[in-house]
Amino acid sequence: MSKPILNIVDEIGRALLFFKQIIKTTVKTPCSWKSVCEQVVKITYQSLPTTALAGFFVGAIMTVQFSMQVKEFGALGFLGGLATSGTIREVGPLLIAFMLSGKVGAYTSAELGTMRVTEQIDAIRCLGANPLQEIILPRFFGIIISSFLLLSAGLLTSISGGVTLGFYFADIHPQEYIRHIPTIVTAYSVGSGLFKCLVFSIVLALICTYKGFHASGGSKGVGQAVVATAVATMVGIVVADWFTSLLSDVALTIWLGV
Amino acid sequence: MVYTVGQVLLLRGQMLSGFLNLATSTLVGVFMPPFRWKEILKQLHFVAWQSAPVVVFSVSFAAAVTIMESSYHMRLVIQNDALVPGFAALLILRELGAVVTALLITSRVGAGLTAEIGSMQITEQVDALKMLSIDPIHYLVVPRFIACVVGGFLLTIIANIVCLYCAMLVSQWSLGYSQGSFLVAMRSFVSMQDLYFASMKGACFGAAVPLIGSFYGFRCQAGAEGVGQATTNSVVTTSVTIIVLDFLLGYLFSYFY
Image (tube, rainbow over all chains, first blue to last red; front, side, top):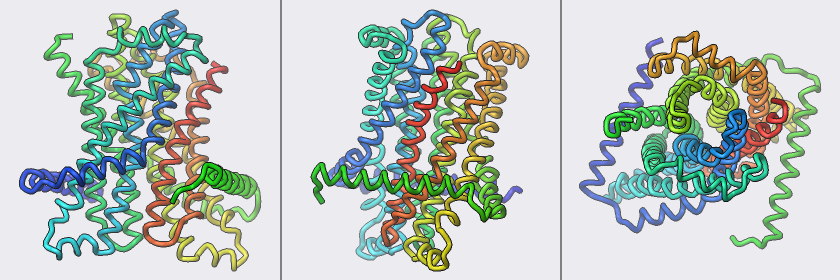
């Protein structure tokens, strides 16, 4: 009974040690900006359509659900603000990070795992280069930066999805919908959404580079690493979501006294 | 490679027709003998029982977040948080429980299924099945399909109940509701109907996972890269499909409330 739990704790510890190694390499021997930018372009270009589509539907779902609830209170005017606030603060970052974990996370760990089992990583080490610096760092920072871009794009399309459904489902004119957004969505909300983006992207980048880099056992091992990455990132994102909500709640109570 | 618009459309059309073909043969295959009970039970054990810990764990964290977020919004709009239990329960039952469960099943079961069928395809095991005059769809996809539909249904119910229970504990701890008052406030917003709709959603999402997963598995290109590519594509397509399905089902169910 205690063995699976110990295994999980072991795995978390190893991932954190890997994170420490990444930070150490970043400080001592940083990778070139060019390689990071290459990764950013590649990842963003690949995932933009998926993320935008998912964002649109997330916004649409939120508007439909919120409109059914606020209709009972006759507060349909608040719909734009409430649905947008709910999307930006919580549901948007969460669901879009889930999408990214499927798209970017699985892809990166499959790529790194294939490199590992075909001994390309060992070849890089033989050539006297540091694989962490050459392969992992560009991907790690590429994922973090492009997650930001993709999540912002996803949140923007989610607002447009909300506006569209507000018009067709709840009969709210787009102007009315958008007019109420700034009354409820504060700068603090946007900041908390962006902070969540940052934390989710770090969790995602760490888990997929860790799992891919340490894959073993041929093509079957790569498949296992991909599945393990997908599950671990989702669980990690949910836990990080709770943790950031708690943090921002505490921060709000301390600094603003709300 | 650069394709013209026509070629892209043709490619998409071929994919769609291939998928519909697979889906219809699977749906017909469900009612065709032989019924592989042992295989179905084995798959159900993998899909439902072994996913349950992950689902329960994730969903209980999601419950805590839901309570915190809805109390924030409530305080913002109507200055108190008296309606938090009702709102949180609505959000959990109508959206969160089913979608989070389905996305977890996608990454755990869907990805594994694509990798498994994909590597069977590229090592020609699927062709070997055909040689033995066994229909690969009936042998591989149908048991997984049944297991995922049933598993999605059951896991959604479990996830919703655990999520509501955790929401109750969190609101007791952080907002000071007693359990009784939480349940009373909840009952004025949601009814048993919501759980029925949620579990129907779960079954639909569960149906999407094996169909899309095995579709990409059968199309897998040779080589280790091919399996990874197929797995990524399948996870992404399934997640998008689940979100789109969620929207469509939510829209449909909104006429029944």
